[in-house]
Image 1 (spheres, helix red, strand yellow):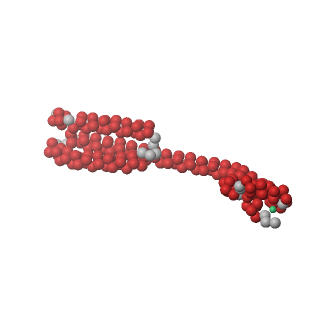
Image 2 (cartoon, helix red, strand yellow):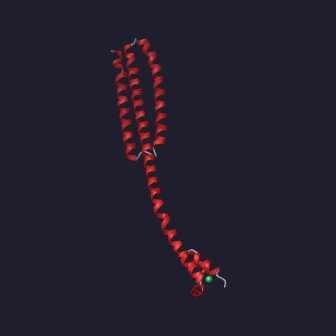
Image 3 (spheres, protein in one colour):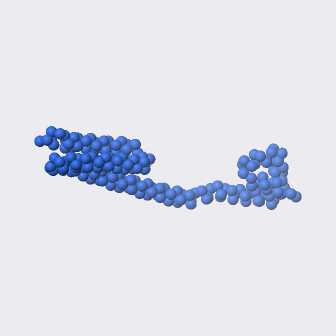
Length: 184
Ligand SMILES: [Zn+2]
């Protein structure tokens, strides 16, 4: 007796069965199974294995894996955020120091003699240009790396903070460099 086609049908997937198992074949399979004990036993054994494959491996190891994966993802994100906030803090401190240095440099000529003042003024103009260029490059590089990590609300807060700082800076510059103050 040839058992092979019946065995193939029994271990086939649903998709494969749709192709292979025509109504005639189905009748033949039923007939064969009613007569053949070995195929019947094999079919039942296969069904047990199939059930175990469907249920067992998905349950226990997958859950531990999922938890470990989530924990790793969370620590990764925390580290990323920490790194971001540290670099942002460092940038803010650096910016504050640069602004302070610029204000001190601006205030210095008022104490010195008028001839020296002209030269320091030119020198400082060049320095301010370098500061501005430095800030521009720094902002560009930082925003490019930060823009996809920090949420929109954070970006708006940061932009607001910097626009306020720049307003304060401009007002301070106007006050310290206004002509009537230098002449008096
Ligand atoms: Zn058989």
